[in-house]
Image (tube, rainbow, N blue to C red; front, side, top):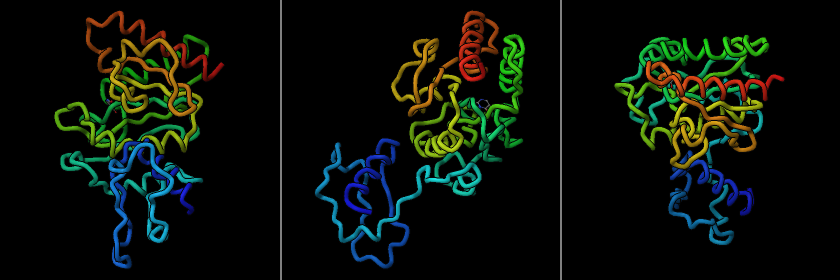
Length: 255
Ligand code: URA
């Protein structure tokens, strides 16, 4: 790897939110090269990376060529990377068609998902299934839940279903990004503010982001309300808007 390639790779990790990288094997090297990515000047310079130490740098593969969902699951392993592992029962990786043209991204598993290891199987999940299958049927699109792919920003249930914290999203986000890169769907539907924030950055909530197209990398992305929000009885307007958003993304992908 030459200096430019290393610089690009470090920039890539920095863009993904990595704060630190580590050598895999520290024993053979006199001087560590564990420069915190956050401490590197932004933009990264091309000149101050010490080439003599490069062969010892072992960066984790980020969406490497030939990445697959299976490989990502293997890399997640029995994950202890953040505090969410402490109370989880099951890691909830994702479910559906690995070659799906449409991916739905939620926030994180709830109690039912944590027990079964499958995303969106509780009440919100039933509503999501109804939204996908009911809307597509009405629109004349032959589509079942099993035809799309469904996953979350964090793979372990946050205690008391709290919103995932920034560091948890950052750590687990690398796996979400790899899932999306491996699947390469035609479009992504972000369900709720947490998914929107993980994929688009920024602070805007669903109300500001919904109703128009965004992009994650080069993939068109729609933001809509989280099904849990739509389950609340007083959110009739939001329900109507969510159905509009869903129609928009379904026609874009399947027409
Ligand atoms: N809410 C989510 O965001 N994801 C799930 O899997 C279930 C509920």
